[in-house]
Image 1 (cartoon, helix red, strand yellow):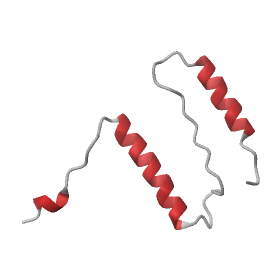
Image 2: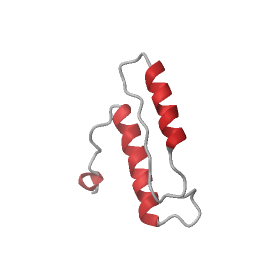
Image 3: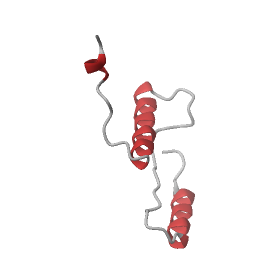
Length: 72
């Protein structure tokens, strides 16, 4: 990696130390990711799958409906 994520680790540690809630403070460090331009499609799909699954889990969505069974 071109940039060591030290500041991100320090920021996450500060948040974790100040956090009083039950849920954890999480940090996601991705290697070889860049800033978007020229990012491999596989990396884009991986990132999208991560944030979508994280969001759905926190909204209480545990299983998606099978759309195939609803076709006439």
